[in-house]
Length: 105
Image (cartoon, rainbow, N blue to C red; front, side, top):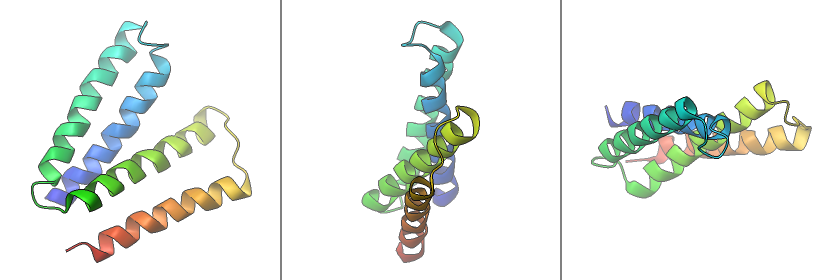
């Protein structure tokens, strides 16, 4: 259950980062509210996950999911560059996430 909560925390991290982008400096109501709710949900899921998972592992995976997710969002929806090196480094983050998951106790 902790791994599912950690995955959800990462997905909510992606959501709050996207909402922050669209909040225009927290001047737009709905994106700002979405940011607040999804940030709170992200931290709640993370706090549940670290009850049983090692905190360093959980935190690294949580931020990795968010980093990869928001990078992919930027490439797919915001027209950010998707050069070979950028995609390779995103893939390295994924490998790191998987490695941490595999080696977690």
